[in-house]
Image (cartoon, rainbow, N blue to C red; front, side, top):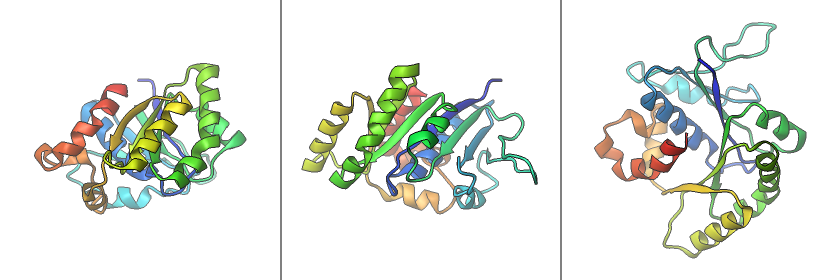
Length: 207
């Protein structure tokens, strides 16, 4: 089976990359039952390692890089889907090299003006990649309260980039509490996280 790579990227620290990446891995694991999903860090620092170590044995498995001494890290044999959780500050040639690995890119963005301004140049680089090779790129709003003025500014900004806004995820402790146990929205009874699962439906359809 051909490995499909999903890149989760935004150069702004604290934009929600890990929340989006871990839950995307959970989504893929639960919707493609014959799959083996890897969650990895492209700079090999294994920042997702702690979350994976917290993941209970009773949950569906999510793997990480296979590392052998003296050899480059690689996906474990049989991996069908890889979710790459990228570090902050990635741009330029480094970003271009990572984008070459990706089949689809998800960009988490928060609504604050600081986050939007910090992401401006990054969105321009993504637009170039999309135009050059037709790379599917989707934006996901993180911790968005649609009742606020900042949400209006957020929507105007995303429209100006020319990139599609797939969905916006609300601010909720569900993500925080589940992450502390190595779990995702998709690992628990649906009625516990019903509102949040509905917000993930567009991502489910897109991937």
